[in-house]
Length: 114
Image (cartoon, rainbow, N blue to C red; front, top):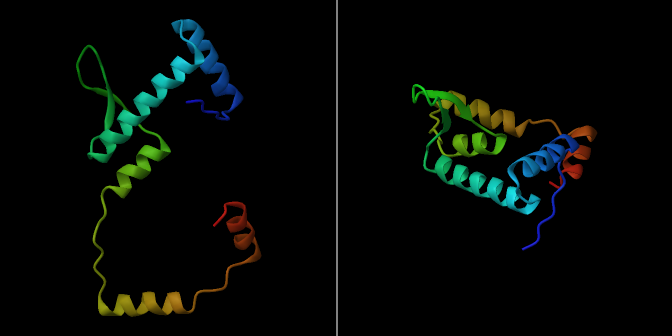
């Protein structure tokens, strides 16, 4: 399958340099990256975190995170919210009396297709 993507110039340069350094084609390098990301998504969905281990101590040296992985982690841990009757009434009133969206908010929503 042929895929096309637009990436920042700095990342594109890094891809070309790394592919050359490892003796891989750009397609091979992208395939490796996608395989790693797919595995990361599967593990985060299981509630796991991805870390790099220090080879000398086998202790976590750093955590691997991206905005997408962080969002998946948060989405996977929903918490039930308990509101008192007073808090519930206040939330209803706030929603009922919410101001109309501003022109800037409407323009932003149009830009993002929502």
